[in-house]
Figure 1: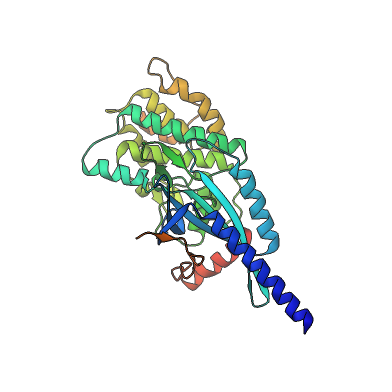
Figure 2: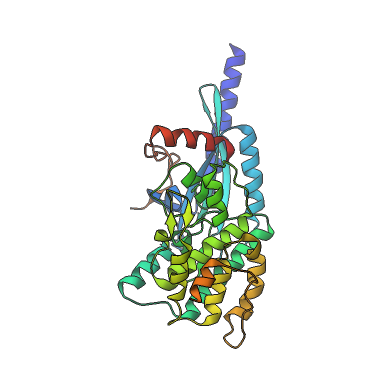
Length: 358
């Protein structure tokens, strides 16, 4: 009996310590609302009491103590990565909760919250028939490529590049978020593999080949695949029309003839240097396509209209055809918000498998 009381007292003391640490973590913020954001996932929107800036409070639930230790180790390493074009992780902490016979480990993060993104900006420009000026597209390319080059140097890939995953600050700075840190989406490849067909995905040709074989662990260079995805994103922005129709998802292929025509449509508005730069990112063969570190090296020459960009040697079908209410943050800020829409049994099976490999 004495042992039970002792254990209970220890548990209560631990809970009290966790509560104090949580309150200390959020003391400078006021809770505004809970939302399900398509980019950030299930979050609580907080407001800094001093700067009035909005931030997102995210929660990651680890499946086991081993996963928790791995997640924390990854977070500590990524937290040190700082770049003006990467969404900031402002702080993090962890807490444990006992449920029946198991303990649940949670990681709480406060990250920079940016409401605007490239997809919204493109949509606005399209409605106004207001095409980007070339210098604006170079600015976009420079912002994102430099950020992704830094991530590549830290062995981190993005895996879901598209207009909606590129954030825009109030100052007009373009930013990307580290996968599974500031955002909660699963990689674009696994979205398609699991049958999620209502989300835009700009996959590379080599990932489509993996998709044809239903590979759970695709064999490819993730940074070169990301370069292709960003090339599609730049093409989407420059043309103000999506690249969705270029993809045949029934056969997991890209219509390269139509891709060539879409590239050719850039001629009246943009320089040959810009067209060649986008083309470089859309090389069909990944061995001819640069990664972000190499692409960053091409930026200065490519964006200078007085210099001619030397395209990657080799044949590309696309190029050949082209030449033809406020309150304190509650402790239960995440309760009842981790709801997911139902999926079919077939999709559920694949998602169940993915759960153990991601």
